[in-house]
Length: 406
Image (tube, rainbow, N blue to C red):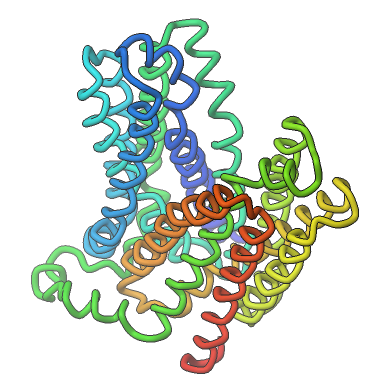
């Protein structure tokens, strides 16, 4: 291997490592306040509803900012926007550690949510431009997997900081972690330099008009809308399962609370493993739309079996694992479909646009399932989620009829 090729490979590894570290922190920060709810309730004398609103504010701010952030990524490059987002999150959490009133924490969580909006548009735009296409499937799968790791380590890391330094120290510690990742990316900024090759800069940036309206209109074309719907429907399914699978297993199979929660753990572990496997598949085949369509359709069909409530708890657990695996396999191909469908100069916007569909789906899924659970129909709730996954597969099938083959 030549020295130039060796340096290029080393640079790609640096980029992937730092981008993945940032994504891990994104997921950790999205749930970082939850382990502190008992002590925050006492500190600010507020209800659990008010504490839950902290996470809602964070999520809403993330959702509404992703499309504008995508435009900023395309205009100024992903690295700058990513560093600014990490600074917003880290700074907000650090300042929240010194808050004297509940409303201050609400404002700071909204600002942190705005910072969190940068990750999908910036990360996936950088990776799409910076990583060898032969390894891109495995790279985006690793990116997703490390996000799951962030969710997994959040409770124990925040609880550990709280035990050692109190709730203020825990929030400050969470903030310092984000600022540290931002500093690392800025320190190794040379590794990111050529990811801005297709982003206008200098004289060309001044000479060329950055046509926001034309870029936004491109997102309303049929193929992009159908990809948006695929993101929305799949995340709606996963969000509904994440919120109510434990209760569903208790009601359909007579599981106790521990068994219900174990079912959710199995679902999440199977999805995480499937994401890594899906990355390997995505690098070995070119028909990413077919892979995503058929695995999601298969996941929907398997999930529908769960509504029958037959075969006992372990049979239900096997169905949960199989459905999760099929849904997870589609994730890397899903991101590569966006890359292939979006104009090269609008990758940030495209990932911001489709990630907005993810956020909306995660918000709608639990609400939809919750209403059916209130009616005492866990079986119907599962069938609805299976049907929603089926709609996701149909959205990709419709896209295949209106877009060139990959």
